[in-house]
Image (tube, rainbow, N blue to C red; front, side):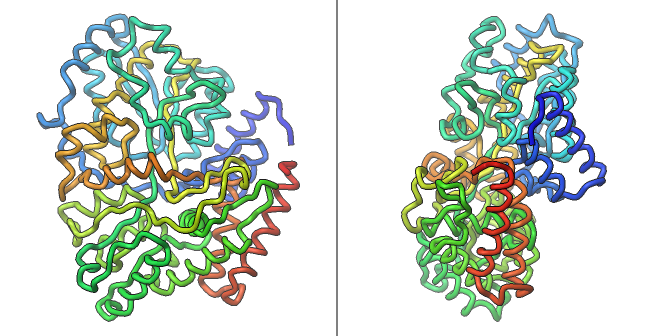
Amino acid sequence: MSFREHDKKTFIADTARDFAARRISKRDFLKKLGMAGVGLSAFSAGMLGSPRGFRGDTSLIGTEAFAQDASVTQWLKDVSGPFKGTKIRYTSEATPPTVVLDKLKGEFTEATGIEVEIEIVPLEQVLAKATQDVQGQLGSYDVYYLDQSWVATFSQDTIDPVQYYKDKPDLAMPGFDFEDFSKPLVEGLAAYEGKWVGIPFDIPIFMTMFRQDILDKHGIKVPTTPDEFLTAVKQITEAEKANGMFGTGLQAKSGHYSLNCDWTQMVWNEGGSIFGSDKKFKGNDEAAIAGLQRYQELAKNAPAESLNSTWDGQWQMMASGQCALVESWDEFFPGLDADDSKVKGLWMPAKPLVGKPLRAKADVGFGEIPGYAHQGGSVLGLSKYSKNIDAAWLFTQWACSKDVMTRCTLLGGFAPMRLSSFADDRVKAKAVVGPGTTRHLEMVKWIIDNNIASEPDMPLWAGFSNNEIPVNLGKLLTGQDFGGDAKKCMDTVAGLIDAQVADAGLL
């Protein structure tokens, strides 16, 4: 299916609005976006109808320890004179950094006289609003939240921040430092065809987490491989099941992207991949089946509610003391250390499990990056159609500055984009047990630098990872179909996916 650019964006905007109004199903929404050559990253598609929980601690906003850097405030006052009284708009889904930024925006307004409206809406509405805005070059929004899979689509509609920084020295924030952004995040999220489409803003990523007290109780060392992990999980389940604890907890809800996240990690750890270099689905080859069979064993050693749980349910299992080992999102940590947590201080971070050698990039398709740490991410883009570009540029620099990004991390506990944030004394000082802890971030930085993995970069993937794959995996795990046969299940998935890839002309 081909579209002229204007018609394509009309189609995308109309499709997003139809889904927002629930005139079409999630399945049809993702399918239509794929037809138009744009989609959601699978991570963001998984958020549709299931937003990420914010587990940080914003109660510290306004305290002296979290006050804005005086030099930043002075710079804003010095350069903002011509823009006082203007208003800029930014629309985003409720990501942890956006939630914190919305709380901090008053600092920017007080220093500049520039009003900021942060419109937090469901992801499909973010896409509809941004697409409609660029299609008509309306300038209704000055800053765009861009899911990583939208970067190519919106690359011509945003201003390269690196170039604009050079072109506008009178508005360049001193010490902004583009070299301070993690290189893997720039390459994986922000850059397209030699330019920055936006500035890296958010990066949830997998890590191993374990209950040190439970491992010590049973003389188990921290697992470093899938084999060790499964052995430990089984041992803990056998010893603790009578006490209501299982070895692990999963995000294995049938038909939900969270199940796909777990599955892809199992496939990569066995040396497999989702697609091959021939662009055929490889989730049914020997390596992938071994990973799925291992996951079936984990499911037998997890609370029954794992089969009806997304990431929130998995976090609840961890927080309530129902499991002792997981591989999942780093963002869980701040909530686990909250004052009302039953397991405060008991969970510990570790490197991702290292399985068989990863399949080479030359042997996979659609830009897939096999790795030991599943990730999702987003960027902030400066609209080239903004009627207040320079005011919006001041806001974008401020929002992504070392000071603000570091304070967002301190208040939210999520992985920062900047190298300096990881090294900041305030961040290190919060690497202790307590609300909004950062004690997991040293490990997160190592993971980003060494183990980051990415799912296929193709418009149809959002649909596959939210429908065909987790729907059929759910049938297998719950016994609705396939008689427990992992190979039979994935052969069915391969047939469905290969047919659609061929029909879309992607082979």
